[in-house]
Image 1 (cartoon, rainbow, N blue to C red):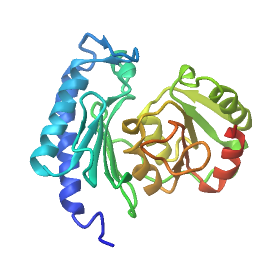
Image 2: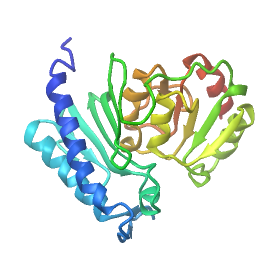
Image 3: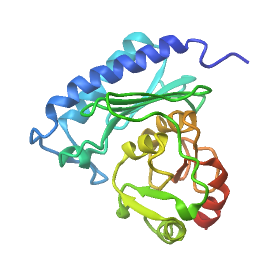
Image 4: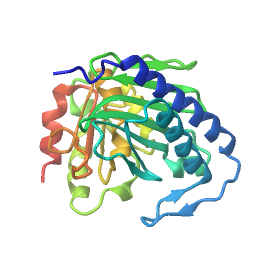
Length: 264
């Protein structure tokens, strides 16, 4: 079987160039009073989202024209391509709109549906997490921190994070609450930034639902390259056609216990 990352240098260069361009576009709009439009699902979108996604698509299309692209704002190109880029230009638009630097640009490369490369880029703080399947995650920043999850010894000592209570719809809420009762502390907010913090050993568990592929694809190589693990709430690998549940955990030894608490 051929190595899906045989052209890793080229793929990584394209991803980094796309993240650089997106950061240059997003940064001037931050705390600039941009207007938000509501999409069909009532989530907000801004000129920063749309402009950054167009720029990412342009970079990838120029460098890797035979690759597919799936983006939050402009849909899918070449859906049958073995390599597919999955992008979220501003993950955490609500945070962006309210001036909080906890949003990020997410850029992932999938091969046959499996994430093999992922970048979390925070254009305001200048932090970037780079994950490549089979390699240790790199954290590039002027801030303190080193990539590597915390080997939290038990759920009772764990820091649990979730973006917002309202994403816990239907029967997901009581299942999530079962997990929340077993941990030391719960914090809200963070979007993709929380997963970067998990990859730095600051957060131990993240459990969320209603996640789209562009919300999680880039996170998998980052979290797993830092020593953690990502699955759905049943412990299954994340899939493009999955149920939208996502569980990230810094110490894989706690995964089975967390999944039991999240079980239906």
